[in-house]
Image (cartoon, rainbow, N blue to C red; front, side):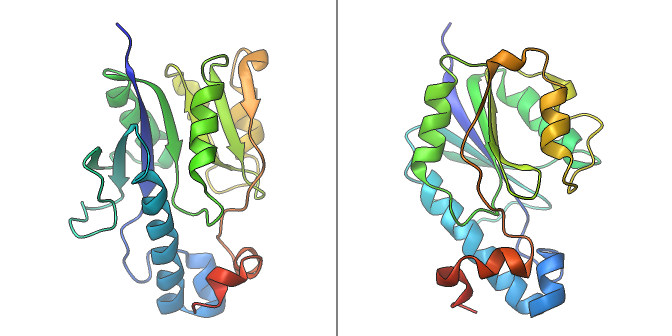
Length: 200
C-alpha cells in the first residue's frame, strides 16, 4: 500500500538561556531567543504551506500557541538521550504510516518550500537526500526507509556529522546532496543575513 509523505520538524522550546547558546555569548540570551523565535516562525511559515503532513517535535513540551497552524500539522515531544536517539524514535513511529520522510531543523533562515519539494521529488529515484550545512552538519535529511546506523554514534554539533553520516550509508550511489546552506548558530552566521540581524 502506498504511503503518504511526511515532514518532521525538530525544534527547541523557546526558553531564554536554552536556545542558541553560542550566539548568546555574543549578543546576549534575550536577543538570541529573539533570533531563534524568528527562525522558528520562518520554518512554520514554510511548512504551513506544504501539502504533505507535518509532525513538529518539540524538545520539552508542546507549544499550543505557536505559528504552526496548518490542519495537517500534529505536535509531539522528542524522546531519547541524544539527538540521534530522538531522531530514530521519531522516524520509527513515522515510517509505520508514512514514506518518504524528510526531517528539517529550525535554524535555517534560507529555507524555502522548494527545498522540501525538491527533496521529495529526488526521493522518487534516490533512497537518501541530504541538505549539507556550512558547519559540517546538515539542515535536511530525507529517506524512503529507516536505517538506524545513519543516526548512531555521531558527534552531534561537530563538523564531522555530515561526513560520518554519508560514511554510514551503505549505497553511496543512492545519495543526493542538495545545495549547501547556513544554519544560524553563531554571530558570524547571523551576520550573513542582514534582514534577520536588523531585527535585533
